[in-house]
Length: 414
Image (cartoon, rainbow, N blue to C red; front, side, top):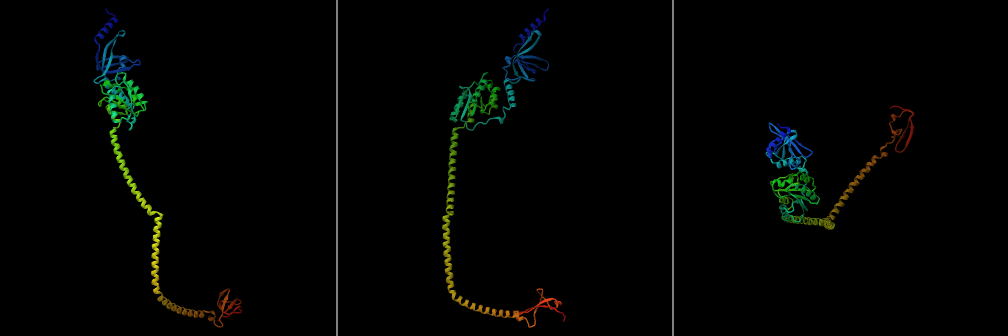
């Protein structure tokens, strides 16, 4: 006969010896990230489920988080808890089913950062057109740094370069990159280029870490991400203000080519000189025109023209006067005779008019008009007839020689 403890012990030995380092596929039924750092979850298929545990030492190595409903493959061993006779799957590694862990971790982080606004175009800082200082955050002895310095020397050697040495690969690389970026942000550079040469996904993973993304987003200096080759797309590429396919391409994208600048300056100088010469010609023509107008409009010229016009008018007047005098000198004797004849004729006509008027005046003399025995009768200052005077009324009788105030003693109609 066997005790319960003995049975559980034998089961534990049998299971743990039989199911060591196996892979199990299933769908996550439940998951709990404990405050201690341990991970407790269960996986299932359409018929059964099993409890799983992953200790903190393995959890910290995971690049992604598991969620309910996720299809995964777990690696580990079956373990038995003897006091309760329970067994569970002790997990050391978790992989997404049909998808790499790094790829899933990349997509999960990408979605989280996108939701936080790290990729918004409106939040990107513009790369300066003129760069006087540049900070290169990369490994000091790397080929990427050598290539960038070579292109800087070729394209724009007058730029001031700060090289910030940092790890770019391995577990300690991400914190080192964060520290180096923070230092570069205080250098007062116009732009910071962070990156490294090509490599595997694992080699480049430091630039997919969330702490690096947080640092790039928080920097005040514009950041160019230049990691790996053109086919490599990292989280740093999405967060940075500018993504370059390679470190060398980053320098070509942000720095001008001095030869092109020299050609452009020569062309601008020629265009400027041509423009200046054209403007000078225009201004000279305008100056000559203005000078002509000034001379024509000057008071002295106006005075001279007025004097010439006055002299011309004076001569014309003198010629006209002389011509008229010559003409009249011939006509004067004849005009004198005609004038005398006209005056005599006028005088005779006027004398006749005077005689006629004299006779008319004599005929109009009141003394000539009044007959003997006739007088004018008036009453109250008005001329009246005798029939208008009543008996006992006063009236005035007057002729050209006397004025009599009379009273009507009696009146008789005739």
